[in-house]
Amino acid sequence: MLLKNTFVHHVHFWLKDKAEKQKLIEGLYTLAPITHIRDIHIGVAAETFRDVIERSYDASLLLLFDTPEAQDAYQTDPIHLLFVENYAKPLCAKVVVLDNVNV
Image (cartoon, rainbow, N blue to C red):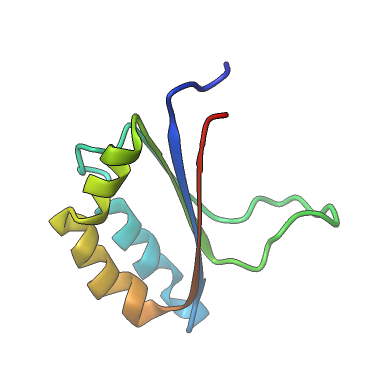
């Protein structure tokens, strides 16, 4: 199925301490109730090992939104702001965000 009218927000997280992975994943699940999110996927690297696959991250978050404005509203949602302060900032050494829209 070809996705249309979709804003994709894909975030990859690298932990300061690998032992904190479950805590980060628990934090990611706190984002699920945010009403601006159309779909959410929380994951870890798959057991695939081709040369082009990036596997060094510890967890990922894939969010689909109906509009760029919905994604903007997500960014300022109090639940998201708590996640950033309580999980992302203290636990992560690096965060990479890839945002994209349909062409």
